[in-house]
Length: 109
Image 1 (tube, rainbow, N blue to C red):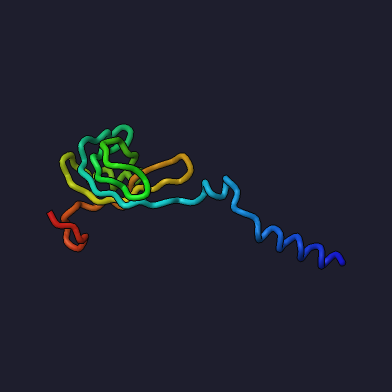
Image 2 (tube, rainbow, N blue to C red):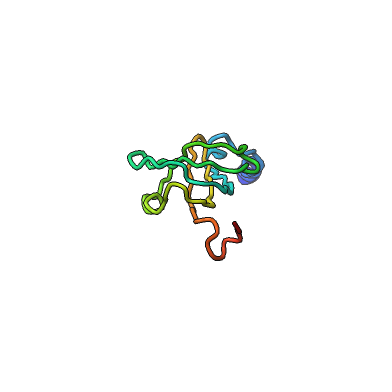
């Protein structure tokens, strides 16, 4: 009898919807195309003028945190880029930054 009760409890747990905290643990990714307009080395923030980011936001110019210091150090104002915008809960940052028009990225000028 106890085994049946435990089995039913496990089945019930498996069918529950993810909680808000579980959703916050999911990192969403969006592709970005834009141009570096400014760099704040103290805060590791790049101001990027970007095209529409499908499924996330329209075209605009705004500051994005860059978590990886090595990636940030390679950026230059005026440089066209492609990148990934990562969103996890209330946190947002940009990574996987590539110079646009670089060989193999599929972007033409």
